[in-house]
Image (cartoon, rainbow, N blue to C red):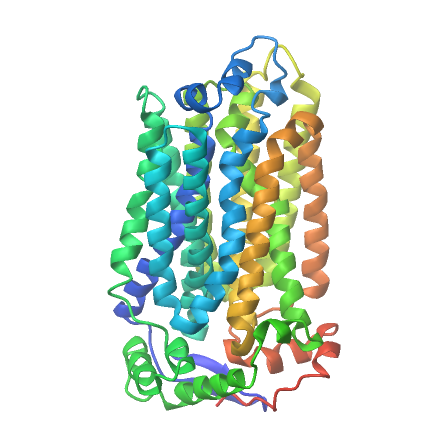
Length: 507
């Protein structure tokens, strides 16, 4: 089915093309970058709850965990333990800006290959770690890999997809993140009883998706936009024909040429981002990343085994409960793939805000009333209800703020600031992932059940932002966003007055 492209003059024209098997293969291979990221998110919480790992690297936490009178909310409050999880995201923050330059100068494909190499080095260091310095150093290399992958993969997916399927294909990145989380939970469930090196197995298997991305990226093509941007015009046309499955790609090719010509006029894309005309895309991209983290999702996914142990599950039962939430995460993301290009972005985000708010409040109330700082945990029924509420929360996040937090920033920037703008989005995501990862266990210790009311309050803010300031981008071609979205929005159109681009007509 051809993609509808809206011209600057308001006329509609269809680009010829269809979804091809080759595009699907490219999407699957690229999405292994998401599998790397997701596996790490899930594996960290499981490993940090394993006794063998704690005894070797964090003996103080191991003692607190098994102390009979220890505060239920503070069993795992240790800055070095949190640093093990969160240092990756600080490294990814720094790497994302370097990756932006590499992405623009050398292409999306090479950037993904570099990401996989960094990740493999990190896996070797962490799985073979003999002291805390070695595993922290390994986590930093993993962070470099995540930073490069999260910069390149969503851009690659958005640029290779036809406009009418851009949402669904881009969300494959988030789908693979959720699959990575699920796989890591399953592996943790089995390796927790493999003594004394089960944690090494868990960390070592992270190399599998990285190796798949490294080898698979040899087979995939570069995006036509990246090729043309780097003056490989005829190669770009050839690839465009290949991915669209038709010979006549002149209209789409001309629109990419035009966008690249506009991009050449911008010598410093980061400076262009600071201009008012770039304000809507930049503000929305940064806010989406902040909001994504302040839903509390990564706090829950990082530490799901720890959280479930806190409310009374044993170690095995806690890991099994994490597997259940992982399954919910995967299937809910599949729902998003089906719905996003039909219902649109805004409706998914707004519905999820209601669902996540209710879930967070229920969890907070149960823990506030029933889970004391010392002594008995929740009853079995109450603990199961907490798991159900967590699953409901994860469900809402997985079909909205999870995938759309990556999709929307990858599709709203014009070509001249696309890589730089997305670097800001990735780095913001990594910064706030680091902050939440580093602070969550301490916040849980200090705020106790109140932490869930804290995240619920943020969900209200997110909903208001979406309602008033986030326009719908469903079905709008990437290079027509300025005319069809920003210049039509009640608030953001005032920033388009100083648009120094010529009247863009996507033909």
